[in-house]
Amino acid sequence: MHEAAKAVRREELLRLLLCGHMLKECAVHMHMSYWTVRNYARDPEFLLALREKSAEIYKRLDAELSSSKEDMQDRLERASEEALEMMIEMARTSTSMVKFKVLQDLLDRDNRTSRTQKLDSTVKHDFISPLFLMHASRVARELDAAETVENEGPKKLTEHNDE
Image (cartoon, rainbow, N blue to C red; front, side, top):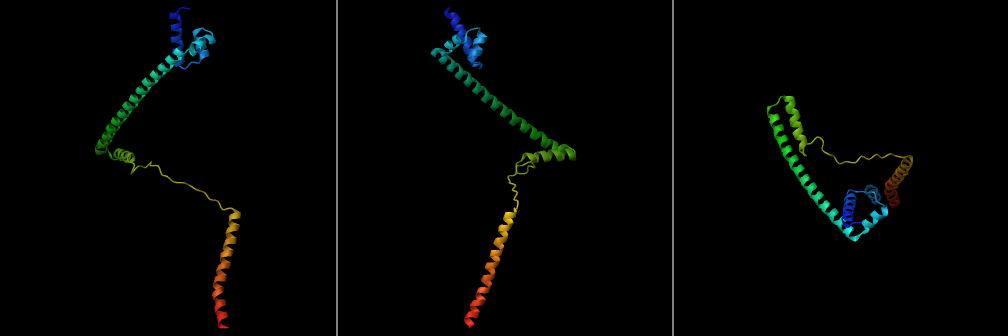
């Protein structure tokens, strides 16, 4: 096979692999045997070219996404500022119900006065079991008995000292 034809096949295989196709899919698409495609893919020069192209694509995509994200964030900030100015103007010039809604919406945007502010709390349900009640009853009886002994103790000591 001519070198130019091999170069074209390698470039086609490189393109298909970068698009996410498996070797078997590439072989079917290129009308070649799987083993031939596998041999092309195992070539160290081909692997180096694949890594380089993949890194290049990653860098371009990363740069595009980061600039797109920054552009979108800038646009949202500008639109938010414009919306706030319009709402303030509506609050000054509108009827009472519209004015109320606009002011309520403005207050909701402030974290200090928001009606939809997230509250951190935990809800705990404790159920009293019969075993817990029996244990509490025994402890209460022991405390009563100890209290009775404490109250009778000084009386017995004073009676004993009088004798």
